Length: 390
Ligand SMILES: Cc1cc2nc3c(=O)[nH]c(=O)nc-3n(C[C@H](O)[C@H](O)[C@H](O)COP(=O)(O)OP(=O)(O)OC[C@H]3O[C@@H](n4cnc5c(N)ncnc54)[C@H](O)[C@@H]3O)c2cc1C
Image 1: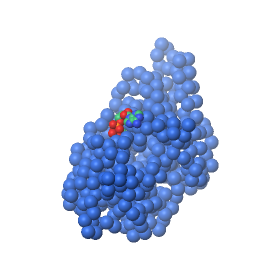
Image 2 (image 1 turned 45 degrees about the horizontal axis):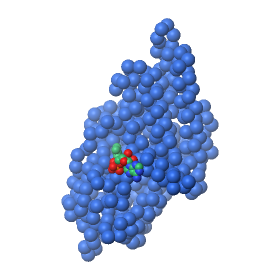
Image 3 (image 1 turned 135 degrees about the horizontal axis):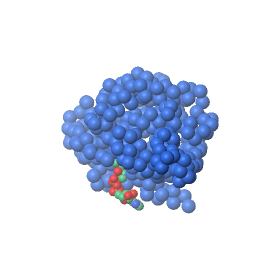
Image 4 (image 1 turned 45 degrees about the vertical axis):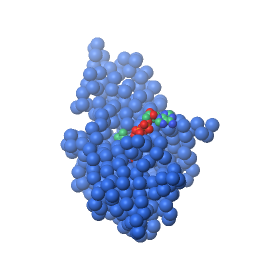
C-alpha cells in the first residue's frame, strides 16, 4: 500500500486542495512516514511522544500552518491544517497531538489574543518550544461545560487559579494551556473566561496521572491541577472577562470538522489495508476477496466512505468561505466518527483472528476509533445541536 490511502476511493481531489495544499500533504506524509512512524511503537509503549518529535515537526513546517507568517506560522488556511491531520490518519500515527495544537489551541490565540499575546506565544508554538493544550473538562463537568468550577479570582494585576481538569490531550507535554475558568461564578456561562497558563512560568501547577486509555496510547491524556496558580491579568484571552463561553462556541465548528478529518482519513486507511489483506489471504482454496460476502461488505463500506469524503470536502469548502454552521459541523463530527467505528469494526472482522492481534494496524485503528464518538462533544451532544435547527 502506498501512503496515500485516499486513492482507494478513486475520487478527484477537491478544489480546496490546490497545489500548495497538495504539496504540504506530500511533505507531511513523507515526514510522518520517515520520522514518526518508525518510532511510533516506542511512543505507544511510553504512552507519550517526546518533545524532539514536536520540534522536528516545527522545523518541517507542520506546526501552525494556518497562522500568519508574521507570528511564525506558514500563512495557510484550514485546508492546510486538514491535510496535516489527514496525513496523520493515512500514515497511522494517530496519537501525535499536533492537529489539536495547530487547529484548536493556536486559533484561540490568533482570534482572541492581543497583538502582544500573539507575538509572545504563536512563534514559539510554531517551533514546538510551546506545546498547546486546551483544558475545558473537569471531573464534574464534561458535556455540560457550564458546570466548570475552576475559579480564577482577580488579585491586583494577577489572576489566582484554583481547580482541577481531567482528560486533557497533550497534558503531560503541554507547556501552554488554555484554561476554561469561572471569573464570576454567579453569572454562569457569562462568568466564563479563558486564561493562558505558561506552565513553565508558574508555581502551583501540577500534572496528575497520564490516564490509562483503551486506545490512542501514544497521546498523553492527563489530569491537570491548579493550586493557587498566579498568572498576569494580561493572560486573559479577549478584551473583557466573561467572553469564554462565546469564544468556545465560535471555535467549536472547526474543532468538530477536524475530528471529521481524522475520521475520514482513518476510514480510508482501514479500507486500503483491508483490501490489500483480503487479496492475499486464502481460505477454502480461494482468496478472501473472492467470497461474495467480502465483496459486498467492502462495496458497502467503500460507498459509505465515498459519501463521507464528499460530505467532509463540502464542509471544508464551506468552512473556508466562513459558512460552516454549528449544525453541519456537528453532523460531520457525529456521522464520520460513527462511520469510522463501523468501518474499523467491519474491516477488523475481515482480518479474522489477525485483526485482533496488536501487531496488525487494524487492531490499533479499532481501539483508536472509539474515542472519536466521545471527545469534542459527544455524538449525543452533536444530535442535540442538530435538533435545535429542526
Ligand atoms: C481521550 C480523550 C481526550 C480528551 N481531550 C480533551 C481535551 O483535550 N480537553 C478537554 O477539555 N476535554 C477533553 N476530553 C474530554 C471530553 O471532551 C469529554 O469526555 C466529553 O465532552 C464528555 O464529557 P464526560 O466525559 O464528562 O461525559 P458526560 O458529560 O458525563 O456524559 C456521559 C454520557 O451522557 C450523555 N449525555 C450527557 N449530556 C447529555 C444530554 N444533554 N443529552 C443526551 N445525552 C447526554 C453523553 O453523551 C455520554 O454518553 C477528552 C476525552 C478523552 C476520552
